[in-house]
Image 1 (cartoon, rainbow, N blue to C red):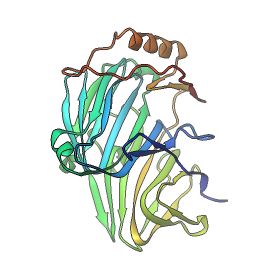
Image 2: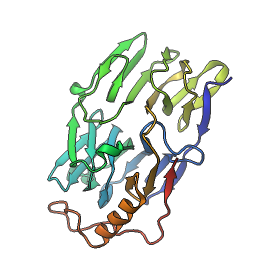
Image 3: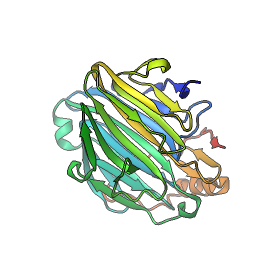
Length: 299
């Protein structure tokens, strides 16, 4: 039996100015992997001088966001008063809990010059007991991230715990999120450390033996209890490993809101329309609630 339960080819969305995102989660037939309910790849793209990323203030509840850049820089601002430049190799973890608002923009220097942007953003659903926790924000520099390296393979732990490594981020549930860089032809084994696991190929190719050759931009959901051997192609590979324990019950996702209770999402929608969320200091713009947002239910 194949170790790959499903193969997801992300759909691409153009956000304007040539900036594209690929959405791997949620997907038809695969709403989540562990607590991960959302996975977007940003770029790679080259932003022209005078052009920048401008994600205006918008709200979240019931989840945590984790941003990881391979190239470029994003300026994060939120309703807690956090102002933080996110650079390649650094981790941004924002817990929304009962509610937070944030913006993501290119900083002044990035706008003056041509700048590259390439990265990923995930949303992690919070356990039911933590859905209404106080919002918080944590940023870790590259030197703060646990890592290990051997035989042409380097693993950096962004969040959670994996292979004995432990992140300092307040994840609130059992999960892991790892960047794996493999030199050309390098091999490594992926243990069945969690019940739900997936591989997202960011760059290069992976040879999985009897499970085939897979290229960048694919999400491979692994069958429970499977142990995989990964071999990088001739150009090497960068992959993200993600997963965790199954969630403690169904979830609903509507726009930027995640909750175990549909009525809580309806309340969040009303609160945003009435501007009852705390604002982001020094920001006057915001993204209105879309007219025709459709829910995604997670069994």
